[in-house]
Length: 170
Image 1 (tube, rainbow, N blue to C red):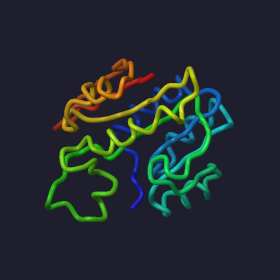
Image 2: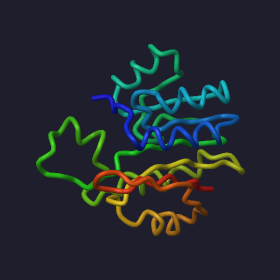
Image 3: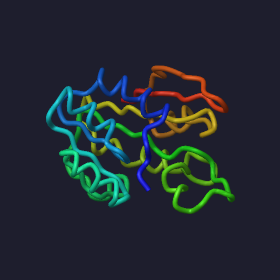
Image 4: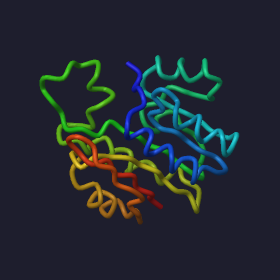
């Protein structure tokens, strides 16, 4: 199942257009909307997703894409890493196929924590991360501090049942 762009994708896209330069990595690329935005600013963009259907979809759109579980197949260092993760807490009633694109773990933040543990080794010295999450995800700022990232909340957008946050980490 390919994650179709929604409010979080559109909000993050605004900042992808602002911060993309040099070598860019889009982790969990889904439909490819963020990789496409980055390609408007630089030609060195790699998209990755755990779902082979998403990778094939991006390849058909002319985006350089590979299958990877977070950083498992990623080599090199990047100026910008983009991550629009599944960030909602587990819902036992949700169908298994859609959990892959919505659920970030039992509490919602576990996948983000796995990402943070590995991201730094794939960042250039002045590299940055753009990450989007929800008010339902839990205290991500505590995670950022635990993994020694400096961060700025760039924007918060209210939606029907949550707030969507975009962070810049370095």
